[in-house]
Image (spheres, rainbow over the protein chains, first blue to last red):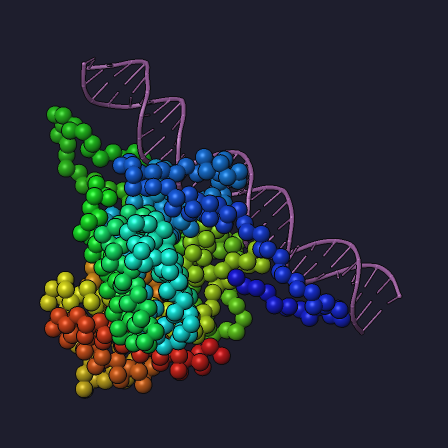
Length: 243
Length: 243
DNA sequence: CGCTGGCATGTGGTATGCCAAAAACTTTCC
DNA sequence: GGAAAGTTTTTGGCATACCACATGCCAGCG
């Protein structure tokens, strides 16, 4: 985002202090295609069909109304992200991750989140930490998470992302978001599971308490163990999702 | 050119065992360009000059002897990696990271490495762990690391990469390697510093000992603290490198 | 009937050319 | 002289054409 500060001096100019909001960079077709394809890939349920999902450059360029060039550049980017794999003269296939790959990603996520928790105990403001409770304010003894799985799942995701953000570490935020995107296809099927949901909420509250208490080691441990628990859960019960 | 490997049984045929050496996949220009540019970027000392380093598509395509198309695709990939930033009608600039970005990356690295250490204590073989000592076998009381900074720095890097690899987690390995590539420009100037080198070796040995003892918590803590120590060091003493 | 080899077709890979916007450079005019 | 206006050059963005190779279909030979 290299916002450009006034380079040359704009000589003798009133330079009215009107809020000139730097014209929208007008994203290129390449980036638009990237966003569109990424969203499409994340939206589709890759794991429902047994045969690999293939993409076709020409078909995509026609559907999006642009030439193949920006499409190819977008594909190249998606391939860097690991969402897609192109095989010369064969086609472009949407990558299907194995169970162990997903588990592996969740472990990395756990590592990053526990570091975020660690940092939060030393830098975040109390009010921001406490605000994390709001994500679950709609749930309680009279309204159990396991009875509103979809809704709880969204709150869950929002909580984790907010947590990481509190670390004020762009790297942790970005890396975690990337990992979550890959795991997302499973999110609906794992985090949302009733049997895990029951233990999830208390663990979240436990993390928040440790953060509020500024107990670095405990917060780190709880954050780590919570997400590692998800990894273990997927490892144990996720087989059915992979056939 | 259509060499065909024996697909079906080739009935009644002598099928002389001529050494057919499976034709090389012959990477595309796009990937060759990506590798070449990445190496070039990592090799150059981006932080030595004050003005930003710019790349030119046409110049590159001429230098590499290919058209602009594969170059542009390679650039798109490098941009995803965060090595480069292209600004429409301005140019492509090699990204210069700030001190706080580097520190942030090192923290993420610490998180991943401590998770790797955790996993190693439960899965790695003893001989593989012990083998980690070999990276430092050339150093000791009679041959101090701080007297051979360059050499020790290389051993240091190799050690960390080998450590992560022992986790047998592709995700941890890949993420860490990516982070290290970004930090590398600084490695020579930070990890190599004499004052840190002195404490580095004992810490490494301490990590190895904890791994051998299968002490999960301790190994995790030592791995984390060691790398966080580097982050703190850069944060404290790295200012001079950024002007 | 089955296997072989050629040909049509599909798909990604690469080369080129043109465009618009920004920057660099020139000219013009007070 | 110097600054504004005009012109050229530079640079990334995009479209298009063509290429090479992988596949699959199918005629033709044995």
